[in-house]
Length: 139
Image (cartoon, rainbow, N blue to C red; front, top):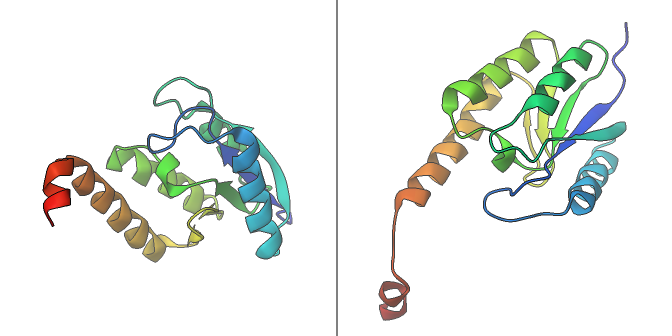
């Protein structure tokens, strides 16, 4: 069976501390697909419930018939590394891929995961550093 299209995935909650309207997320996803010559399938929107990934997991049921998932941003991934790795595993085991429209990143195989995980570790480290505005002004 031929796989057709890429399912969009967006949030109805904050992404990395910012509220990005679903309309904007969909525009970015659609534009990314168009520029990448990917067939865009309408986006699934995640519930506003904190740490919910029910809609993402529901897309997994489609992965045998679609090419993969296009998330609005890599910052939509779960904070917990083990949960992220389970998502990567599920997608790749089904022969699909995961793309991130805003950052123009892609996971097509196991080797692509390292770059995403490096970014996530950097994000976590930066979030732990507390610098006062006064300190920055002194520089």
